[in-house]
Image (cartoon, rainbow, N blue to C red; front, side, top):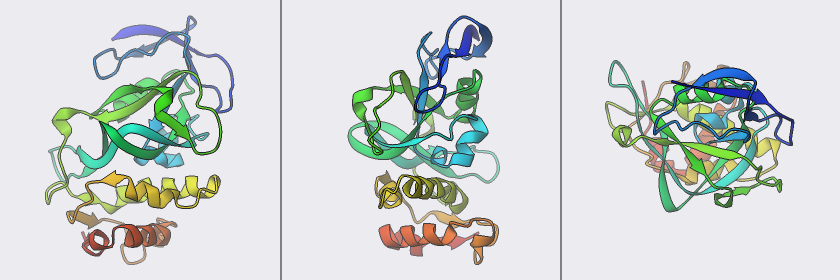
Length: 245
């Protein structure tokens, strides 16, 4: 572990992004997957899976509510991130570097001093890689902020497609697409949720519906109907193949 110092310098359009400078001590792991952010530079993260959802983001980064919709060039979102090998597991969304690919996502500030380390721990099967401003198009007409911008790309040893033992699970799909629907409604971006599905690769018939009440899912997931309609429209063959678990 290497000690760095952190403080929150100023508010901008996104809120107050984390800035590294002299002041408050915090520990951030320094390794090839989690480089130390540069001192004096605001920090941002691109979320493309569960981090699309506001509640999910805020569990790890309390200032992440002020996310804006973006498109990111050079990364391919897919069901490629294999979960833990112990117990019942799943395949998560991941991203890989691909110069020909584009995906929609959200961009949010890292506000509190420990949040980079918390995000790194949460995304422990991923490497935090830097994204340049010219790879990002904002969809709300705002400027891409100055600072270091990060995206969590799947580690090579965790790359694998969905399978019977590691299926796609509906509870995770729900978090992802509920976030896409939130952004679509908040920014009046018609088709944003459909783009989330369309720019995601690796959909599979190894897909289980693990909702708490799969036949009455709206009790625990109010957006279940809207999510199902998007899936049925965009990937009908895979949607029809989902099995209840």
